[in-house]
Every structure is written in structure tokens, then in C-alpha cells.
Image (tube, rainbow, N blue to C red):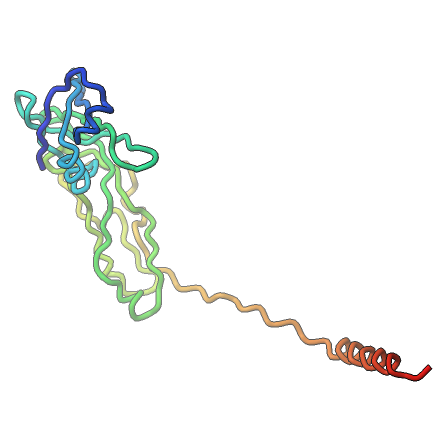
Amino acid sequence: MQLTAQKRDHTKARVLRKAGVLPAVVYGRKEVATPITLSYKEFEKVFHEAGESQVITLHGLGADKEVLIHAVAVDPVSSKPIHADFYAIEKGQTVTVSVPLQFEGISPAVKDLGGVLVKVIRELEMEVLPKELPHEIAVDVSILKNIGDQIHIKDLTLPQSAKIAIDGDEVVVMIAAAQEEEVEPAPPIDLSAIEVHERGKKEDTESAVAPE
């Protein structure tokens, strides 16, 4: 995944955005913050594919830099990116990111037994070397065959260098029994009230037509 950047001049951000250019900044633990510009279309494509959990190679600033998209500011009306922060990674330095879980397959317990797939954890924070940073972590739910079956953190396949703070016995996804909705019985009909009402209506009618 690659992006081409240029050092930013003093052109106003509003003018850059109208020209299809995205203002941004790149910085790091040993990297001086440098204002840059990027092609808006290129950035949108890379951001859509990489998100904030994949290493990107940044060209055009001298030596290539390995970076992560650290933050993206968006327009409150259009929701389009208006500024991006890139974090430059040092060689050999680990990074801490949240990686999304990708649930794959079909659970027999859901398909055949009517169970409910309950996703307890949807992303996992880990400290990992950039070269081993996964775009997502696959979770195969096809192994869940019975009501009550679970997949735990320790069952996931993680990068060799990954370190996580969460306990390995924490549940990632499970099968729960479907709960039937209770149907409240209709209240009994009070026949005596109906009879009184009908009788009163008849008497009123007779009174109305009785001769004076």
C-alpha cells in the first residue's frame, strides 16, 4: 500500500481541498512534524482499503517512510476527509493498534438449530511489529455446532510478535439459544357488561318511540 506526498507550502487548506488535494501532517517519535499534501482520490482509496491498521509506504519526502494513518478529520456535513495525520514508524519499533475481527463462515448451530450468533468482541487491540500487522483477524464461526459453543481469544491466530492485554479465556463469539417472545393472553370478555349495555340501548330506543 503506497501514497505519494509533497511538502506543503503556505497555500490555505480550503484552496487545496478545492483543487482535489488533501492537507496532512506526518510525525513520529523521532520524526519532526512535517506538513504535507496528498492526492485526495489516492488517499480515499488507500484509507478505504487500509484503514488505520495497515502500514503504508509514503513516497516523495526523501527516503520512503513507513507510516500508519493515525487520525482523519472529516467534514461534519459531507463526512469527507479534510485532514489526515500519519505516524512514522521507526525500524524495529512495535505499534499498538486495534485490529477488526472478520467473522467468516456459517455456524451449523445457527443454520440447523436456530441459535443466535452473539459477537462479544469486534476488534482486538495489540502491540505488534509493523511488518506483521494484519489488516483484520479471521474468526471462523463454522466450528460452532451446538448451542453454547464459544470461540475464545486463545483460539485466534495472531501474529507471532503480537502482545495483547486481554485474557486468553475471554469469549469472542458464542451461540445463544433463541428466546421465544412471550405472547400475553387477551383479557376475557365481560359478557355481563355487554348485556347491560345492549339492554340499556334497547330501553332507550323504546322510550324514544313510546307515545306521550
